[in-house]
Image (cartoon, rainbow, N blue to C red; front, side, top):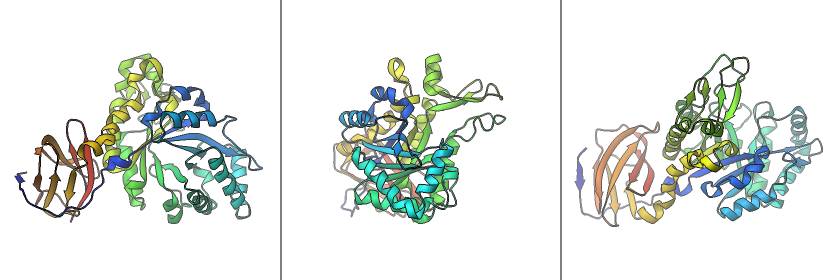
Length: 403
């Protein structure tokens, strides 16, 4: 891994650090709206208010709540935040399901799409998240999504979806999948109350990796994925009564539990795992998604907050343009050499290459100055890698391809 310092002129291509568009998407369900004043909106890029559902006549409601105060509060706290409304959810009642089946029929679809679009516009929202799941994803789903996407995009609004980590509903067509601006991968609920004799971690790190690989195999580009993480867990202490609990419950019981993933037969994601998943998301996809914000540690113990744990990893991405805007890698694709051109003040930095499974395959500590050439010949197979350059207070990331 010899490093050669060469002072010469090279042709460089423009590059984009992943952090410039890295998303932190947080869901807030209507039954947690009383906690809205304790949410740190500055640490989010997207807020999904959940869940909006129609009655048989198409009237829309989100648990009888008024979302306007929360939209206003979030926008004041973070003018850059995008506030979305999330449709349906995993707990759709039979009445709601009957309404969807009727409203999504070809004869009624346009009126329903118009109603949803007007809801977004009237409430000053930035878009809509489609969280129709399982029985709700039928032959009506893709035509509905395509028409809804056309309507929202025509008004400059965003459309996203929440989908299972390792399963694609057969009725989601390639066109419908492509219509979404990005997809939130629900990489949790691998087990739970529905499998009382299968105790264990419902959201292991390996499941996050599998979800990313699965959806890439389905033709979804990494730039359209956000990795979902849980702020809750499941208690398998009694196989006859498996229950869920919030991360806050564990921390309020004992602050040392914040760093663990298991206490007895209670399984969850602690700070260490959430940070590791955030690193995975930073290296492979376009963001991280949280279900859900009201389950986090708020108030007196908020130094143990999982949102803070995510923020501690993503924050360097937000300052990279100020610190490392004068960094460029080339060529891309590369063959045997990667060239690094830097025009700033000399500074010590780590240059790291990771594969798409997040494994470190090359690392070198350098003095960041002028032009550095890395000799990769004979080290790596062809494929896509994530190059990162990390100083004491900033990170620059760029995807590179070896041919």
